[in-house]
Image (cartoon, rainbow, N blue to C red):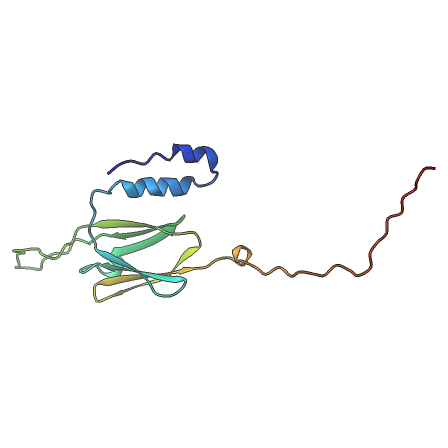
Length: 155
């Protein structure tokens, strides 16, 4: 994969540093991280849902943090004994710790998270402030009376 050089764009743009950094990070694979698997879906015009398969993790072993347009989901299993007199012969259910980061768009807020049947659902909603929404500007008609400007002329 080729690396794209954004330096010419830095000369003619202001305030897009975060966008270029994000594009650079997308071009570099993060070690082919595939665990845990997840889906991102649009559930409405301004709402989204991230679904992550976190089988074997309880709600107190998962932490979710949103900070500066980055959503971080971490999972860390507590050491659990296999019980007295039992021996684990095969481990097919992953119990490794994970950390998954998602870049969020501006004004995208985390509404809530639920853990059900081994799936973690994180609901997101776009909340655009009123001052940033498009607004209708009323056009007023000018008054019918025209003002006259008097000028003195020299003779």
